[in-house]
Length: 153
Image 1 (cartoon, rainbow, N blue to C red):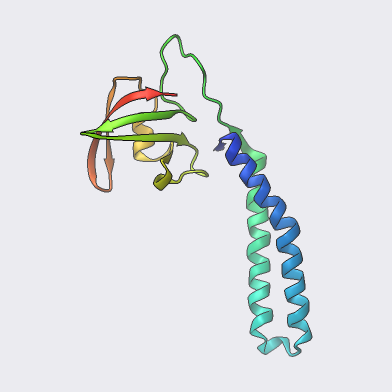
Image 2: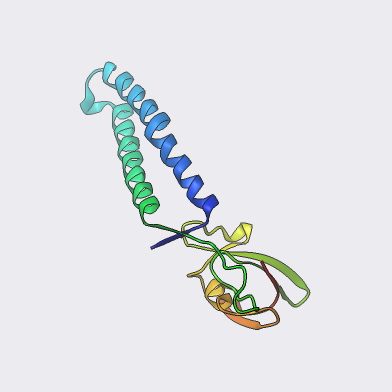
């Protein structure tokens, strides 16, 4: 299962469209030019273009499978009166004096440098199911870290 936000799904669909149209046409043009150069056995342009074609087609298959199997993340608005951290939640948490904002997303969309953490990461797993005021502890590459959840959206 691939968990995606609506924005993440849209980005994947855009990439798929670009790869099926623009990239394929570009690769076809490059192949045509490489073939025109002659002897394919020693033609590095032809070999590299075939490699690019193979990569593009593989990525198209991967995108199609991901889109087909995607489960769209829609965080619930009210969980019995108390919000709990779940897929799609945007949480503000603090460790010491440092406040950080995290968006819990599926592994396909994770970009830790932008605050998008995977639900499968140690930090993402630690936050899931907790409420405002809870203190969580997670093992990170920098060691154990404690966060206090300040808000959940």
